[in-house]
Length: 237
Image (cartoon, rainbow, N blue to C red; front, side, top):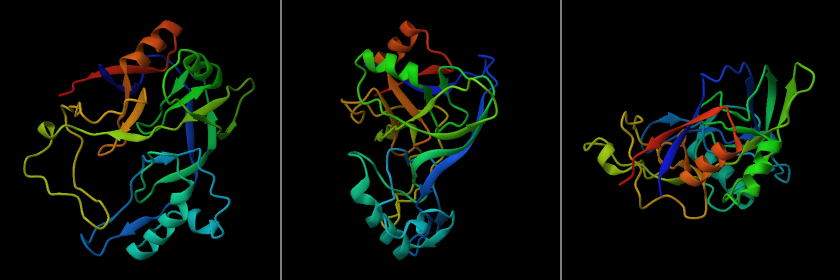
C-alpha cells in the first residue's frame, strides 16, 4: 500500500477561506512533571457532542489549567469519544463555528490540520467504498448566495513517523502530559507497521497536523475529478 500527505492545492485558483473553530475544547495544560505549558491544535472530533456534560462552560474558553483540572475534564469527555480517538491538551469537539467566504473547490484545507469537503463530493467518495470517511456538519456563516454545504471530515490519529526520520537524541514524551519537543522532519517517513487497516484517511499520532491518505483514496479522488487538494507521496519503511 502506498501513502500520501493531503495538502491544500494553492494553484487551483480558489478564493474560499474559512475562519472558524470547533465549538468546544479541552484547555491547555500546566504540567508539574515537565514544567511545560502547552496545547495542541489538531486532534479534533467534530462528531462529539458535549451538551450532555453538566459543566459545559468548562469547555468553552481557551486557557491553560493545572494538570489535575485538565485530567478531570478529560474524564468527562472520554465516554463520548469515537473509537480510536486520543485526547491531548487543546483537543477540540463539536461543529466548526465561524465565517466562510469565496469560491471553494470540492475539498477545502486552509489550515494543515483541517479538511472540509462538499457534501456531494463526500457522498461520491463513500459510494466508492472508501473506509472510515465521516463528514460532520458545520455551523459556517457564508457572506454570499449559493453557498456550498461544507462538512468537516473527522480524521483519527492512527499512524506514526518512522524513528529513522526523527532525531536520535530526542527525549521521550513526558509521562504525565505526553509533551515531546519534536519538530516535523523535513523528510518525513511513515512507520509502515502503524497505519490502520480500516481507514483510508488518518492523521499521524505524533504529528497530528499531517493528514495521510491511501492510494485508494487518491485513486477515487482522481476518478471523480475532485479538486482543492494535492497528494504528496509519503515514503514508508
